[in-house]
Each structure stands twice: as structure tokens, then as C-alpha cells.
Image (tube, rainbow, N blue to C red):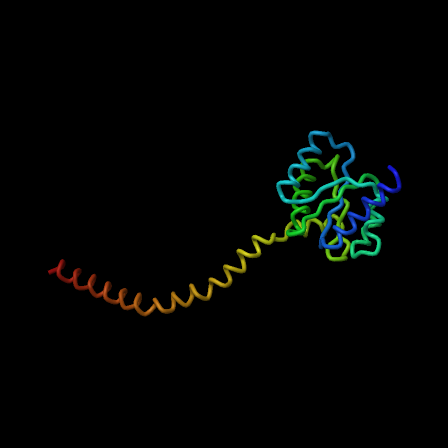
Length: 178
């Protein structure tokens, strides 16, 4: 690959990576073409960017950025994946794919906001809820006080209804015995 092409690729990648909070690096020795296409499709479905780069291109792209610590992982074949909206999405896809292809596909590590992640760290990132799940949890928290308030307001009326029902059953039981 020509030096000018490498420089163009690394410059474009550097601009993109400066806005990304998390990147996952993977190794894919011996992965078949059909498995590679399946992996690319899974990343696309999750809204992730996935590409194989030369290590020298990646090295120049991360120099001077918060992602510089990944230079230590740039050995052998390297592919990267990231998602601008959901930092955990590429980790989830990579973790799921690695389970089925243990011999041919390995997660090298990653980086999250300048902190280098090992394989276990990428697994932890994969287990974190995505933005949609976090929004649902937040809405649930907002909804909980209103639901509790309605229950408190309803409790006296429900209690009165229970007393009246018990009295009615008591009176109905007394007439049936007589």
C-alpha cells in the first residue's frame, strides 16, 4: 500500500475516532469468507462500523488522541469496530461472535474514553445496557412515584370497599344460617 494512501486512511480514521468514545479491536486468523461476511452483517445490523486496517494505519490514526493506548494491541491481523451512539454495541456483537468462533476470532481488547480494556473489560462493556435500555430504566424511575401516589390515593377507598364487602358477606352468612 502506498504511503500516501496510508496517510489518507489514517487521517480520515483519526478524525472519526476523535468523536468516538469506545473502540473494540479484534483478531480474525483463519476466519472463512462466509463467516467474515456474517460478522460484517451482524455489525451492520447493530449499527456499527467494522473494518480491517493495517496496523501502521491504526498506529498513526490514534497518535495524539485519547485512543493512543491501543498501540500495544496492534500486532497481527487487526480489525476495529465502533458505534457512535452505543459504545457497547460492537462489544456485544464481538462477544457473541467470539463464542461461536473461538479458534478463528478473538477479541484483542479495546478502549473506552482513554482507558485500555482487556478482553474481560470488553466483555464487561458488552454486558452494559445500551442507550435504549437506559432510557427505559430512566422512564421507569420517573413513572414509579406517580404510580405509588395513585396507589396511596386509592388506598382509603379500597379499604372502605373491603370493609363494606366483609360486612355484606357477614350479613349474607347470618341469613343463610337462620
